[in-house]
Image (cartoon, rainbow, N blue to C red; front, side, top):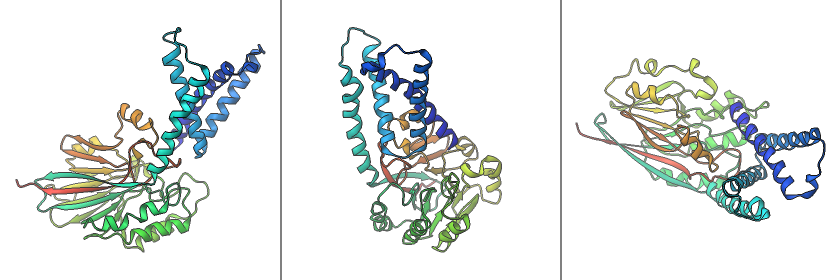
Length: 363
């Protein structure tokens, strides 16, 4: 979270400087030749206000402001700098065109956030003696930015899947979730039906570690989970029949690698010829898991970037953002999650629950 806030603050600072020059270009009263110290002070003030506002609030206004400034800057770079003969009215490139693009995008993003779809993957393995169906849902962030009916309306649909087991992949709640809402979401998850039950792994937000004043304790959280017949997996394993092992990881976000068992330690007592399925909130340790001959890893956390173009930037920088990836014999599935975090829009991918069909492939 600290890295995220620093990143957004730097972006806000740079856009703040650009905003000052944009204002000077469009409003003649800022063209007055004042002392350089006063101009520099105004630049710093604008940059600080925009950077702090956007980094530390969840208001859609801050997001819109960032997007409009970003697009204005792009238009300046693309239309003005390479060819000085190109003439686009300032009011269009610095205001109306960015607004005309940003506003409908975020209106669509608001409705997209409150629509949950089903995403399906199929995986074949000779290690499996029978077929399994798994439902994975993560990043619900209950009681914060998504309408509750969006998830409630999907419970019956999920139950109709006839899953063998269901995994709650972390961040079911966050810092904005009240104690009553925390109890409500796990009470709702008790209604989810599957052959072997429902399993929970922690996400980085579940224990409200980014909030100074917590709405519930970790003991209250664990009690709400367990009292609704949901089993917590935290660097522990669950065995199904004689051919499948589910490994539930502690979350990297509040345990870090020094406090997480290695995959080798977790699998010391497990039979090597079984299909091994790792549930880890964040898509981490992919290379190590591949080296340990893990068959499947499923994660959430990324929200597929949530807000365009963050997901595209994450993908370009080599992150596992969304969808299915292959690393040697390991299949990695990254879900965009049931909801989103912070801003009440989702303009990168969909909100989803994931169905994974594990199919026996005869040797």
